[in-house]
Length: 266
Length: 301
Image (cartoon, rainbow over all chains, first blue to last red; front, side, top):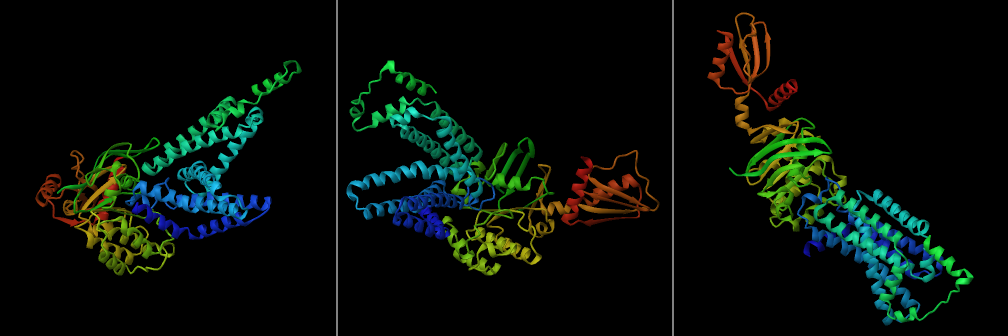
């Protein structure tokens, strides 16, 4: 713990300008009004968060054989702990504070909103920050890191928009469940990648593992029947009976059912 | 004397190209071991394997009694590493570098660190990125010697440095020699010769020999034999295998004796050339010894 805090303090000193910048963007995100301004500041905040995660991971880069730190007595748990602490404090916390400011400024009930807000940060850390950190731990520098993000983003967009229209799932409102499962898969890949990289720096193995995992996840995403996310949503729903209480009668003679079935088969 | 580093049958291939081919190496505790060899011989690869930066394709390495593949923070706290290729945290000042590293090492000695700063004349407030190459090497060496490591490994530390900086670095090393075992690779044989106690010669991925400097310099001699008449090359008898680079000129034979013993060598000369007018044997600098060996091996290949 002591070593992790020592490394954390070093990273804070090293990245103080970037920290100041993300705090400023988070403040603007919280203070701005109007959908366009919020969208722009939100995008800037996301980009800055990804950049800062890259910067802090590359301060002790994993791939390569010339880094200063690999011949020094760094404990891998301390190093990984320091990096995750940094991400939590300077990526997630500013976003949390900005969201909190929005809640207060718009007079939402704080007590009832806070658990959801905290939970959203947990999800953001697990589903977004960790995959970005894992990607940075596999990349040999900032440029490959940025390109990797673009490739992953383009692949995700391609799979979700081009390969799988998934109209049936959208009609039923369970597409978010499918995306959530994809995020869970991404996190499930990121955790072992981070552990292997920080413990033994087996970058080639980790890259193949990540690629294989993403490919398997993408395949599962494509072939997953919409009934599975529907079943999952029903299982997790606080009141699953509400969903089942709706009855939709389809007249076979009108052809509606055939149309629906054809869509499902596509 | 215990070996602080022991490598057994190390093979390292990059894709299918072998860089190390059955390397065996022992570095005695307390020694200053110079690992010499031409460019591409495998010196840097050897050192990276010792430091667990690279993994050997096969073979076994022990460093401070631990398998090199299992070197962790406990062992690295007693090992110093300085390399010409190392990427230092350039944003740090010299002062912050030392302050940052201090808690990592239980044996960190503030007095020693202060002495090294004075000795190397390090500018504490300057960022590493703004230091000259020589100063960066000095800062790296100071950060490695301040915790009095049991083993200091240096990869081409003098490469591209001016003579004054080299002298400063060597002075710093000499002061630590004894309590710290030093293994350094270099193709700059002049520097190694000035303070190494042991020497190993690496070529084409194999250690061609490894021995104490005193023994090496004692057994190599450049021998000149003056004869009365132009020497007839003894075509019917082979030259002794331990005579390298033989040259003949009118009334003169010259060669390098690799196992010099005054009486035995003189006996072998008389046996080959009969009565001779004069035999002189000159000690050879390390550079000349290595040039002789390298040329002999390339000729044999």
